[in-house]
Image (cartoon, rainbow, N blue to C red; front, side):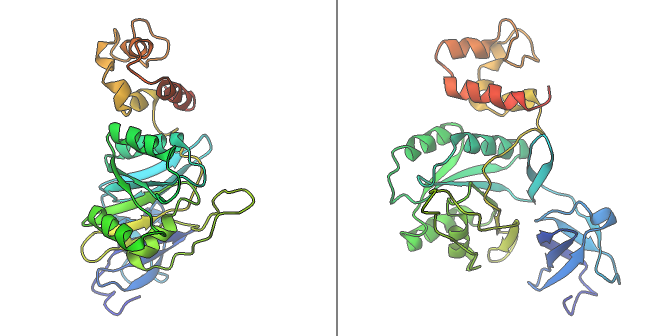
Length: 296
């Protein structure tokens, strides 16, 4: 614990390892605390109050959050971070990216009430398939950035700094897209990076847990997350999913029923827009697929 721990009992959770977590005080000094009782649900990014005089150091309370972002499947939910105000979706031409992963992450960001920034990395490679995906995400409401974090690090760092300034940004992406390289550029954390597997051309996992990195003064931060291949949304209802997809939502006011799920209901304006070519068939098929795993 830092020397002034007896005075300052407020800290930020910057990493979690099972029941223990790494905490950081306002002066930058670090310590360790135990998640137990009221602090059991503390997440990376949470501001917490420590129990006076406890040994080991215990989290006494989790302060009110501004946001909470997580992913879920039919088995469990995984908290990614709390108190972030921007989600940076990192993808690249190689290894093969999933546009459905990006769409799911966009929905999760919207559900959490945070902005989305899409970062196309490795732009020195052939972007014939990546650029249309980027344009589509912009049309869905995301801001965009094209960088080469490894090929042109100086310009990449300059562009990222503009987007990250004054914000707490969570980096999300499939394995191998360059998140750890971006963290190295921005915070000098020397996050471990690996090249793509030459045999499978798939990304190797390089980050094992979410980690909050302070960016300068104030609440600006960069949160690195493990690379993963699926972004589950089973914590959201089907009705909520429909509202969070702007290309579907803009047509929903014409539906006969206010609670229309746009699946089998009669006089559905969303399905009518699909038949008229106003909604892309792939986006509606994606909606059906997501709904199949979500509660009504």
